Length: 329
Ligand code: URA
Image (cartoon, rainbow, N blue to C red):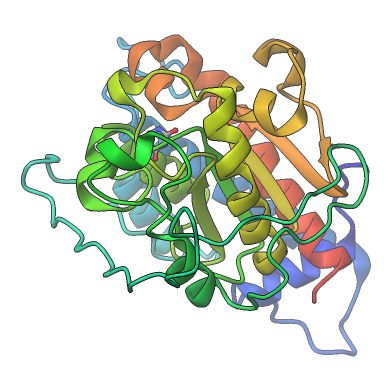
């Protein structure tokens, strides 16, 4: 797999953003290339500023604190006033404090089949990495019916301390799936993944590359229940819960998977490699391209990792565009 920007990719990009103005007669690869790259450069500049704004006043990405910076709003205004194409709207409204945020209502969980020992269906044995993975729950064919079947799960002790089973959220036909390790306390309280402070940062990171959690993106965790004190997932918990994620991935069929943090990547890839070793490489998860980046909670604690995360996220977006253009299905 290679990164590359061809006129065909740029043309699709321009068309998708209503920037492709040439008639068939005028069609000229060089011009497509020029206009496409100009558009990408503007997007990159705009995203860079959004990103910097999202992550706080100081960011080494834009300028040293003493230098004058341009806000995304100013950039957009200046671009509107010249002849260059207008930049698509991106919601820049500041995310309200977690306590004032609209709290999502957990989805009700229907009564399970009385014959199930652990109030959830047993997974069929699956083949471990590498190679094609078998369907652990072939009887389910939709994300909703699968959720209804497993949301009462009592296969491991976390079921006794959870408030909500955190299945996942987003577009069930997403091209991009983001995977964390396990729900935190906010996620447990609300029943949705990444809705706490780390989740708000994740939303801003996605917005900086023009993505939203419910539009072509799906977010899930390896564990569906909150481990006390946010400890790392234990082997017996992963053993029971990972087949649920595998089934979700088989239903969604993403083109790209991104692990949020080292722990999720190590569990899914059956590796002990460090984050430093995994980052920046296109890995393979049962035939699906797989990237690893910092966990947003780690970014909150370590602002010096913002810059490498920005690089990862740009790479992720480029790769996603490339994968979608080579396989538009
Ligand atoms: N951290 C995770 O890994 N997942 C969540 O859903 C929230 C925080």
